[in-house]
Length: 148
Image 1 (tube, one colour):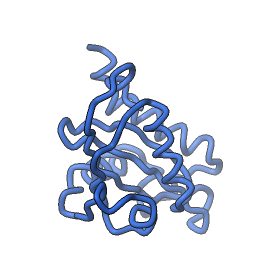
Image 2 (image 1 turned 135 degrees about the vertical axis):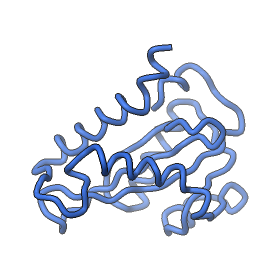
Image 3 (image 1 turned 120 degrees about the vertical axis):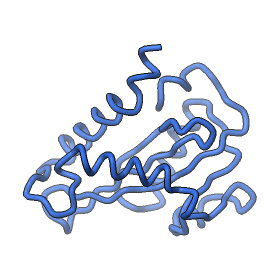
């Protein structure tokens, strides 16, 4: 979770949610980064790694719940995990609004070679794959909040 949200409980949090594909070992072993961004500030709030399933989305929701964050509105694409697990009054499907979060996908793919779609650089273990991406996210997206 983003350091700016530790100890604070913003009311009526509105989040962009999206997932990003990569793989470990070979393309038949997909690994997904699920993350959410605050609509108002553009900050990445939280993220989890896993498969593209309901269970991984529920883990992301648990991270937010454990941090004491209440989400008033989720803005997502039409992926079935969002449709199945979110109440209709809290969910908006709008791919066009996700451009800011999609831009962060491009930043990751540009800076981390193992996320490039056509590459010879890849992780052989999930531990290293997730660790490299998590370190980059903390350094690139969370660093400014920690230093203030």
